[in-house]
Image 1 (tube, one colour):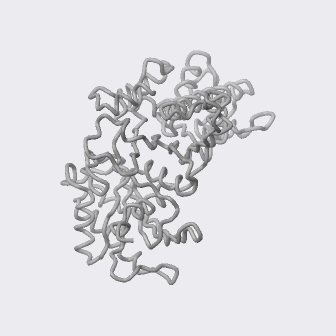
Image 2: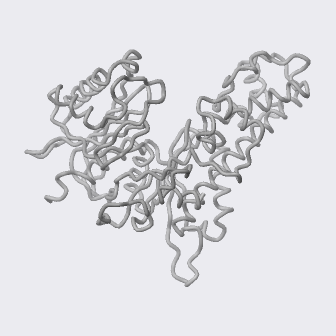
Image 3: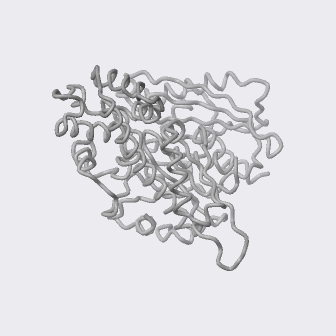
Length: 435
């Protein structure tokens, strides 16, 4: 992992880790003051959020709303989508209560979390590389998404300026650092997976501009695309990748994220049903369906502590239509869930260890100086809800760190990306310099 990180930081065209420069060099300190907005667009819903920051004494008052995007706008034009978003933003701004105060003479400022592939060109601009997640909109690819949103806000008569364009993982890192200054990295373990961390600007050979005043730069690793001969890929992983929409891409993600863990379990159970009659003489037809077994179902089966695994049996009946499973078949299914989750969690922990190793936070100081506390912020439903998975991530990381593990903490960062975008709007505010 460390080798591939360094290749990406050198801009090696063949490096699987893109190590994208986020242009975030000012991270929140906790001293930020004022009213800031965030827009989080990453799927079929988007969220608008506002925070009133009061420095270290009175940190955050926040409100947010979630808005569903009408399906026709996901395949319409760029103007239609952004006009809809701008109209909802204006409506939300109109509901500011007494807890929120914009100083006179100031524009409202917005942090824009945009969770689609973007070529970022500054802290507040980036061109769309491609739409994903069911969006197919004409005319936006190759355009600056901040300019598209800004024009829509102008058409709406909304006086608001985008001061930070951020990826959701970078937003989680900002939210994590605001809550705990010792956070050095953020990891998303949900449907997908990614990581971002704070790198020394001098360790980024591909950085061309003047060195940032802070001396640091946040790197968005896009680590789901990590691949290596050392990854323990099985026949099931290779087949899953070959049949996927993006073969040979996102290899690491396909081994550790919530989108795929249940599917790996399904493929193993299907092989056992064919080769060892796991569910009797007939292979359950539903077991042949791709992605019929979701990771939340796998988690529910894995957490069954009843002596006869009756909850697991009920899940097999509901999902696969297998009315009567033997106790042996249920225990084998439990074992498969355990092994697939354990492998994913251990690989995720190895990735986190790779980041800490790159930063020199993986060992106890040899000169006898005091140990430096290090925190990692983790967000995502897989980590939050799949308790055996998250426990294994933490135990594996502690094993890898050895003696250094006593100074490393892993923290759940609920909704880090939403508040993180507002915090980055604050730390990159056009008004910060004036104060």
